[in-house]
Structures are given as structure tokens and as C-alpha cells.
Image 1: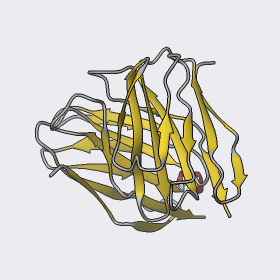
Image 2: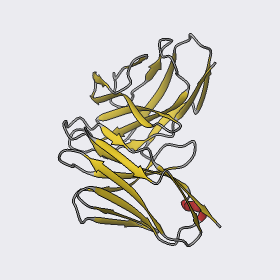
Image 3: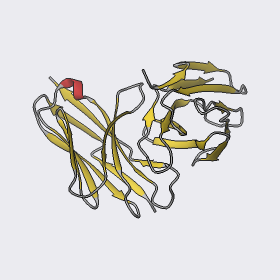
Length: 113
Length: 112
């Protein structure tokens, strides 16, 4: 079955620690995206990548970093510089430029205390 | 500025009571409008894509329509399992990056 997987589903970290969220897709999609969802704020774009080895900042990139070394994978690192890291993180993918339908993974809920 | 606004924020219906959700958008050169369903604690599930005014798409009890300024998601005779948050989104008008602008969502509760 084709789809997007995110792991883990729940993640707990202490303040000051970096943490990496996994996102893998087997849809053969070129583009991948990371969103953050907070209650009452909707989805906000963190980073996106239209092609392997290239990525761009979204609207709220500060305190986050990404890599895109493989087409299937787009991991997100939440660094200690992110002031409010507790949130629900969603990964999505699409076929790429010219096709905007994005398909989402199940999400990772990160709690930092 | 590109913008998407959904209304109402929350909607409570009795089972079988039909209604509509609204998605108003302001974007230069619409290149699609997308509807998603999101259950609590899960990722959004893609429902429909609409590309041009007058277009309609249907899936079970849901029908999405599009005008030049807004889209409606009509829910006919809803059931409790239709309870979810419904999101709409449009691509940024000024670029072809695939970036989407999402509305805040409408949370629908259908009571038996």
C-alpha cells in the first residue's frame, strides 16, 4: 500500500534537547512538506522540498532544520532554539510542481517539558 | 494578500439535518481548491479538488461546489461518523512551489 508514514506517533523530550521526526513516503512523490498544527491556529508551513537535495523555508522555519537526501525521506529536526516546540507535526507529499494535491501522514505529537 | 477563511468555526447538527460549510478565498489566479477531512489526532484526509467556478464533486453525503469567490461543502443527511474538522486550502497565487494556504477549519459535530 502506498502512503506516508511518520514516526513515532508520540514523542516526549526535555527542554534543551534536539529531536528528529521521521517522514517516509512510497508514493514516488517529488515534493514533501512539514507543517505544524496548534489549536486554533490551523496548519502552518515549516519547510518544504520540491526535489532531492533542495529545500526551502516556509512561514515558521526558525528553530527547525530539515534534510532531503533521498526522495522517500524528509526528516525534521526540532532544535533547542525553537521556543514553543510542543505541537502536532504533520508531513505531507505531492507529485510536485504543477500538482498541488497534498497527501498527509498520520502526524507526530511532540511534547517538550 | 492570499487568504482563506472558513465559517462557521464550529457547527452542531442533529443526525439527518443537512447544512453547508463555507470557504471564502482571496488569491490571484486560482489554481485549485482542496477540501480535507481531519479526525482528532490524525492527519488530514484528502476529499476533493475543484478547479473552476461551477464545478461540483460528490462523495457519499458530501458535495463540494465552487464559485469565483468561495466554495461550499454541503452535507446531506449527516451521520455521527461525519463528525470531524473540515479544512479547505488553495495554492499560493504568486508562485508554483506547491505551497498551500489553509483555512482554520470548521469542526462539525453530528449528534445521533
